[in-house]
Image (cartoon, rainbow, N blue to C red; front, side, top):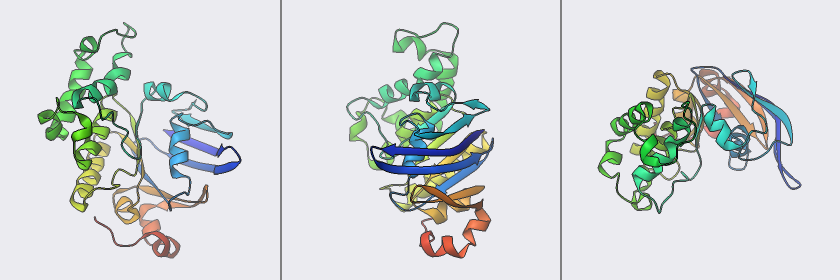
Length: 252
């Protein structure tokens, strides 16, 4: 589904990503691990069009998406849950979900719709809303509450729910466990397995490498902007280099 070929990203004179290549096949859960500053977020931002490539190519379903702006990558089926959640704290939970549903609404033959109330009544949007409320019942209870007043775990749920509102075929997640209690981390990881079983392809950047590899099909290790090791999750869990550098105590 996703193919990244020799992608490089620079911020001024500082190179964050150096000819990184990876593949995520349809239906897989692939994890990308590495230390802070290794370039993992830059890779996700390049895939989703948040930052431009200096060189290289990115393909989604055999369509080159290199250089597309982020709103167009969402339209093509990429859902992104950024590091730090990126919710709109001054807006209600429902308003955040409504914004997440906007790409789904514009896929209809009617084009862009003017009022939020109009596209929230679309059958697929309603189905997505029912799904996220089933996955995260606390969000249904707090749909009128200001998003910034939610707990950290609830905000992470909202960020993931908002991404699901666009009917993504592939989810990219950047450190979804960051700042969460161990029990919530386990809940998030179990949910990702459930979403994969439901047919959503996943590329996961996760600080808890051990936990991520336990649920992943395959993994990549990134160091100083480069992909240095790749293999099945089982292979990486047994790799002495990976074990020594990344596989400390896990919450899973």
